[in-house]
Structures are given as C-alpha cells and as structure tokens.
Image (cartoon, rainbow, N blue to C red):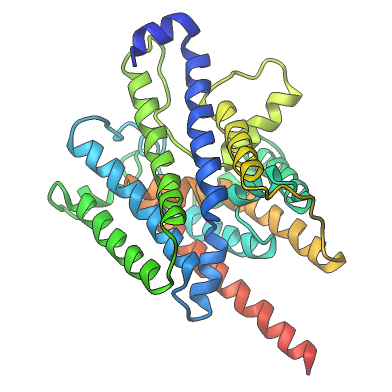
Amino acid sequence: MDMVALVERLGETPTAALFGLLTGMVFGIAAQRSRFCLRAATVEFGRGRMGDKVAVWLLTFSTAVVWVQGARLAGLIDTTEARMMAVPGSWSGAVLGGLMFGAGMVLARGCSGRLLVLAATGNLRSVVSGLIFAVVAQMSLTGWLAPLRDWLASLWVTQGGRNLDLLSALHLPQGTGLVVGLALALLALDVARRNRIGVARLVFASGVGFAVALGWGLTYALSQVSFDPVQIESATFTGPSANMLMFFLDRNTVIDFDIGMVPGVFLGAFLAAWFGKELRFQGFEGTQTMQRAMFGAVLMGFGGMLAGGCAIGAGVTGGSIFAGTAWLALFCMWLGGMGTDALLRRNQSLAAV
C-alpha cells in the first residue's frame, strides 16, 4: 500500500476513518463468527469451568499480543507514543472503573463491543443498551458526569506524565511480551482442544485479536506520513461510541479512526450474520431483564470511561502493548464480572427457596 499516495488522494482524516472502517469490519466479522465475549468468559470461569468461551477469549487476547509484540520487535510499529501510553494512566480509575464495567457487562449480558455486534444481528436489547452506554460515556467524557470521573481518576495516577509500560518497568528483556503471548496462545489451544472447538471458530477468534493489531499497524503507518499529528490507536468502544453519538448530533464533528470503526464493526457483524443466516429480531425477556440491562449499560458507560477503556480497549488493545493501567483494569473487569454473576446466582437461589 502506497500510504503517501492514499493520504494525498483522500486526506489525512478520511484516511484515518477508512482505516477505522477496515479495522472495524475485520473485528465485526470475526467477533460475530467466533462469539467472542468477555462477559461470557468471566461467567464461565467464575463458575469453575475452562470452557469454549474462555478458550475463545484467551485466543483473541494472545493473538493480539503475539501480533503486536512481534511487530514491535520487527520495527514495524512503535506504540510508545500511542494515545494510551503518552498520557498519565489512572490506577484508581482502572480499579473502580474496571469493577464497574465488569459488573455492568454481566447485568447487560454483554460488554460494549459484544452489544454492538449483537445489535447488528437484530438484537433490540443490545440496541437499547448500546445507546444508553453511548450516552453515559459521552456524559462521562464532557458532560455532567465528567467532574466525578476526573476526581475519581485523579486519586491515584501513574508517575512521570505517562502510563506505565509493564515490560520496561519490570526490566524484562526484549521479546518477553512475545513469549507471554505465545504461552497464552498454547494455553488457549489446549483449552480449545479439550472443548473440541472447531477450526473455523478458532480462526475467527484469532481474527478478533488480529483486528486489534491491524488497528495499531494502520494508525502507526499513517502517523509516519501525516503532516498533522495522528493518534496511534486501535479498537476500543467507550470513546468511539461517545464520538459516534456526537457525530450524529454535531455536524462539525471531525471524521477520524473512531468514527470509521463503529460503523465498520456494525457492518462486518451484519454481513457475517447475514451469510450465516443468523439475522433475527430479539427483544427483552421481561421487565427485570430490561432494568438490569439498562443499569448495566450505565455502569459500563461510566466505568469504561473511568477505566480508560472497555473490555476491548483496555482488555485487549491496551493489554497487547502492556499498558499498566490496562492490565489492572482488565483484572478488575474479571473480578467485577465474576462477583456480580455470583451475587445474581445467589439471589436467584434464595428467591427459589
């Protein structure tokens, strides 16, 4: 690809949006076909099983780490100036936001990325929850909830004006990140073998992780030829959902990677569901389910913005570059998800007595 010619023909921001669209389509197709979902993985693991959902999540995460760390070693990308790394990270935001997001995704029955994928297949519950998530995320970014988010995030931040690179902070040799990714990939494949997961699903699960690496690679390549500064970033849904909402409300909104990615995911998931004959309308199963989903979407919107990313943005995208607060947020998302599922099951058991 002649990056200079492409930028000269389209312009820098439309090129960024095109790259977001491509990244989103790869993500949407792969996520729909693999049924990738952090909520499902946390619930399964919390109930004492290493099943197919855990295997898919592990394979997605490890694939992202392997591709990104391999590209870094080969000199193809440099994520030290990525948006997530170039600003101070919030430890308090990672903990509080991660716990809130984890609880919210269980209540809403899907993380923000999963909701977008399901919405593309005709799931009306996900449409409603996704809209609430986007509104609350925007309120947490620049609206009424922004002061509270800023205060909670400022309680404990990383030093030196930047996020913490775990590999550098631990003085680990080059290649450690790649080794970690390969080790997790072997674990994922072993779990997949024991659960007899088909090859096609494994390929698509890897495709979700590859989409994350693709986003990093495309935005880094664009940053090397652009006259104006370009954010080095990849797949995430909290900020982009808020930005996409403003795109429809404010005609002066700048078209960028985020604006392209959200419709890309929707289009990719729609096409995958169409070819797989899985398009069908689905609604809420009752009042209680609707209330839980709406409250969960609120928790995810605020928690994702506070944590610095969602299950994808912090959990996979940030994790693939070993951003310290991203790994902490991911850990807390797992805790929040497993804890909330345990509480829901306990209340159901008490109600049945």
